[in-house]
Length: 78
Image 1 (cartoon, rainbow, N blue to C red):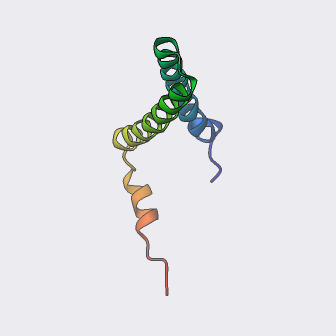
Image 2: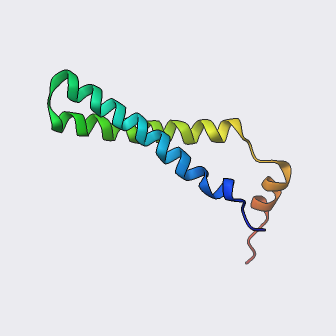
């Protein structure tokens, strides 16, 4: 079964949203303390943390259906 276009673009949405949070955080730090190195560090940390939080919340909000669980629980053979 081929994934739909929406399913294929979902990771791009997550990266875009996390990137926006990272850029916003970096700009706030840059405007407040005027240190570009600190702004890059805070922006990177905000990007990574927000990406992990978004992915975790997505997994919790959309648990796999029984059919999807059955597909992944099948023995892989020996």
